[in-house]
Length: 276
Ligand SMILES: Cc1cc2nc3c(=O)[nH]c(=O)nc-3n(C[C@H](O)[C@H](O)[C@H](O)COP(=O)(O)O)c2cc1C
Image (tube, helix red, strand yellow):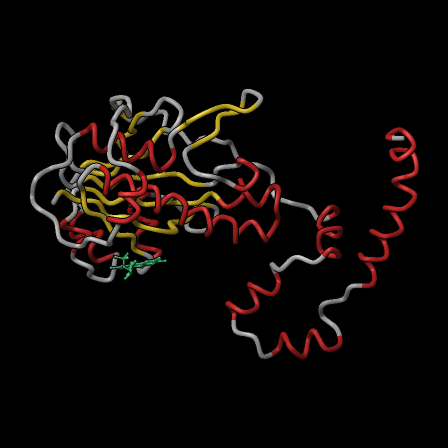
């Protein structure tokens, strides 16, 4: 039966695909009249909406090549992180207690706490057919996000900008220095960004997801930022820390701070964490 389907499948599939390819003209008729009045956000949503026709057309559409699954900084100083071994409060309690906290004490974070937060954000938690899977879901298990940490106050770490190397569960030091003023300015003067112990920058390499899902992949990337941030929130609660996610920031400044071009890779979300 399966062999028969395999043989006759293309006979049905190819004409349907050709029909869809030539018959759907989104730039004609009523569709284009509607499109004319759309804002850029409405257009983005509309043009990345799925229909069966678009799904079939997408099979033929050229997609960008898939970038490497991990970004590395071969020349960076590598700081090993302690294993994420913390056992905290019940999940239900963490959910109940989660709040956005914007005021922190001056006490530094410990390296163990930072390690646990990074593990919650992107840590490798399992394998499927040999492929590592992480603490957050990801469309097609393509994991478009890189996590950067702007360190203001962490025991045993110089202040600066670090990249989380997921696979060895380590930090790569990218810049040394006090970036409190810079991240506050980049975050539209939201002071908690300079007062926190650390600010996570969630930065997406879009082509990891676009290489499979095309332009709809952008939606998936934005959704995934929320998954990561929620894990950081709940982990922070469990560690008795305060945290807040931040969507309002000057993109170019944050991109420059972490050294990405803003096109192939761009900062999507910030998350500040501090001690109480
Ligand atoms: C997408 C998104 C962007 C946000 N951006 C900011 C921000 O830029 N600054 C800020 O202080 N809070 C920001 N927040 C946090 C919200 O203000 C906060 O979640 C909301 O007031 C509800 O409070 P709660 O988180 O304590 O439940 C953002 C939340 C989301 C989901």
